[in-house]
Every structure is written in C-alpha cells, then in structure tokens.
Image (cartoon, rainbow, N blue to C red; front, side):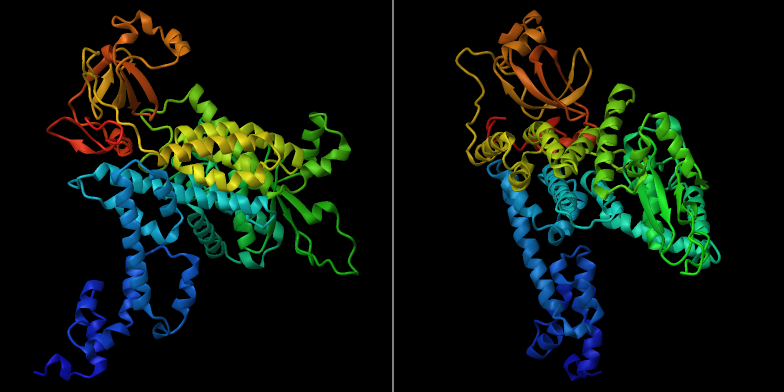
Length: 600
C-alpha cells in the first residue's frame, strides 16, 4: 500500500476536501512542506468559511467571491482573518465582563464590528454552557451587544430615509422588527419572505403573469388573505403590540400567531405587488390606510392599449384602490371621497390626502401606532411576567419598552416633512430618549452622540443632550467608589447583592442589585411612599431590586422575604446584567458588580 506522500497531488487534494474541521485541515498541512502547500491552496477552506460564519460584512464581497472559480480567492487567508477578528473581539468581551469600567465603550466597539461579529456573539448568547463560571453574564452581554448592533442597523435605515435616499417601504418598516426582534425577525428575513410570497403567487395562480393589472390586484389580495398574511384572526386584539411588526405575520406558523394592522397589510401587499411588476403604493388616508394600484404606462387596468389613437381612458381605468385588510375586491374611489366629505375636508384638499404617501410618512404613522398599542396594553392587557424591555423567548410578543424606544428613535430621526414641525417633534422626544438612554440603555449614549448634532443643530436640546451624554460617558470611565458594609454601630445590612427575594406586601419577585444603610431617596419620594409609617422607618437599610418585569424598585428591609427556590427562566435571563451565575448551594446569584460592592 503506497504511503500518503507517494500519491499524486490530485488524490491528496481529494483527501483534504474530506476534512470536516478546519483544525484537521491545518494539522494536515503541518506535516511537511508539500502538504503545507497543498493545504494552503485547498478549496476546502471555502467550506470551512461558509460553515463557520453565516454573517458576512459587505466589505468581504462574499457573493462576488462565490460566483468566481473557487481557487481565485485565498479562502485560507480569509478564514484566518476572521478567526483573528473573532479572537480579538472575544478578548474585548472577556475584558468587559471583568469590570464595570468602560463597559459601555467596549460594548460599542464590539457592536461596530456588526456582521463580522454577529455569529460570534449569537454563539455566546445561545451556546454558553450552564457550567460556565459566568454563564448568565456571558449570555446577557452577548445578547445586549447583538441588540446594539440591531438598533444601529435600524437607525441607519431611518437615517438614509432622513437624508432623502430611496428606501423601500417594507425595509423602512422592517427596521422596527430589526430594532425590537432582531434575533428572529429582521430586514433580510422580511425581504426573503416577501420574495417567497411573490414566487408562490406565480406558482399558485395559473396565468398570473398574463393577467390585466386589475385581475392581478384582486388575485394578489385574495392570495394574501387566504394565506392569513394581511388579516387578523381576532379583531378584539386589534391593538396587540405584535400587530405593528411587518415580519411577524410573514413568519407566523398559524393564524393565531399572525395578524397585523392595516398599515402593515398594505405595506406587504405593495411589496409583493412590486415584486410581481405591479405599481402599488400606500395611501395614508385618515383612519383608513389602503393601497393605490396604478395601471402601466402603455395600458389600462383592464389591459386595453393606451395608444395615441385610443380614446383617453377615465380615472377609474388607470387607478384602483385596494383595502386588503378588509376585502379582496377593489374599493370605489367615491367611497373615500364620501369619507372625506363626512369629515368636513374641503374638496380641493381631497387629491392631496388621497394621493400616495411617502415612506417617511408611513414609518411615522407606524411609530404612532406603536405608542397607541403600548398604551392600550398598559390600560387593559395582562403581560404576565414578560420583561418590558426584553422580548419573550420566541419573540412573538415584542417588549413594550423596547418597542416604544424604537418608535422614539423613528420620530427623532424622521421628524416631519416640514422642517419646522420636524424640529418641534425632535425637541419633544429628545428628553424622553435621553431618559431612556440614561436608565435602560447607557451603552446607546455613543449612538445618540453620533446622531444628535446634525438633527438638533441650533436647538437648545443639543446642549442638554451633550451634557447628559458626557456625564454618562464620564461616569463609565471613573472607578466606582467601593461601598463597604457598615460597621461601628451603624444599621446592619442583612441581605447581600444577589439575593433572590419577594416583596412581603405586593408579592413581586426580584433580586437585590444594591443597598443603602438608610433610605437615600429624595424627601418627596419618602413622603409619597409613606416611608416614615414603616415599622422601622427610614433609618433601616433599603435595597435596589430588579423585578421580573425588569422594573427597578427601592424596598425597605422589613418588606423583603428571601426565597431559596431557583428563580424562573425570565429572571435568570435578566440577572446576567448584574450577576455571573446562580449558585445552587448558596441559593443566590454570584455578583458581577464587585467594583461597587466588593464585600458582596
């Protein structure tokens, strides 16, 4: 039997192509110079690249490389480049887990790697083993970095729109999905699902390509309604937050999971229609979003020629209106005229109101709908134990606070088509956004700092924003003064950071993230909360607690009941921001905020 080196290069290359792991391929080439040269030029490195990383930054021009002969690209060098990048990113990630110092800056540095680091952090978030010493922290911060990546992508879409660049409506709306549901539903997902529906229409409807525009419009509406993509199974849940996201009905497993508002229904209809060669645009009609389908330049809606010799077609032969949320048949133009007349709108304003809406107008309307859905949810719906700023495990129920944050960003970025109204709107939302950034997303301070100067130029809010953001960034770079447990006769702080507990009176559960030897709240809060009526008053220790809804609480020691059961999954997920892991023996979380509480 011949030795390996006695085989021709072609056979050795074939053997190399069967190595499943990149490490095995590399080891193969370390045995001698000849095998090293064969390994370095082996096309198997393309397989290793594609199997290891699913996300690729545009700078790699992956599709161009895949279209070329495989040996035209140095896939081994590309593999090594990405491995080195992953190693460097992981080193930065490990550093941010070790200390609170400059944690936000490190998160931003990693988020800016974007697609080149998405696979790395998705793997950490999903696959860190339970036995890892800092399992909760690794998962939470990896997920937080991904969230920052997704928010940056969404905001860049709205920035393009604000700069006057062309952005398809479905992409601009899918930016909300990217912002809030980025792990499961994002812009590329939405585009792919719309492409799939367009292909299915042509497969399921015989002769669709040769139909008149009018027949195409009706058949498309019927298809989308039959597929339950543009309808709502339970109108009683009309204002459910999930109905504001264009990707959810497209990816729903069944009708119960699906459903969307008329705005998203029309956007889906127009997007699929455009993929099928039709001219369809949304009309942001008051309280009645619908689609306007326009005939092609050379024919009427019914396919009759529009040659110079033919009679001039009437308006009804060139334009039709589709209310796909409610029906598959066209809605007469006169119906909308009558609605406007009933609202008291002067006839000479009808054309402007009934005309096609801009993409920015639709995005802003979608943002207002999100605010309305969140308010409706707070008034009547029960949220169970879902966190207000983290979407649930299956991402079928978007987090209310995160959705509101997305809507604030869209209002801030797009403002209004009128410059004066845009400035007014930005002034209104700036303070709200700064409060959210300071409280829940301090890692977004850099993102806001990058965006605000251009949009707030000449407005007093720019100074306010600059001061607050500078303070956030300064605090992050300063070493935290350690908070030692009191001695010398001061009140004893019984509980430690990491304690899992329940409020004796109100019953909510959470974990302790900090404490004060005595109540350190403002006098007004002390009066409002009747602190002095407590048995031990304001002189007892008070604890910072995060509950299962991710709400921050400040609780007197006498109201804390320590729990020893393992916390529920939702609370374990939230805990990663503050703790390394849950200790089953000690029945508490292991702190990751020792910079401030070194003795806990």
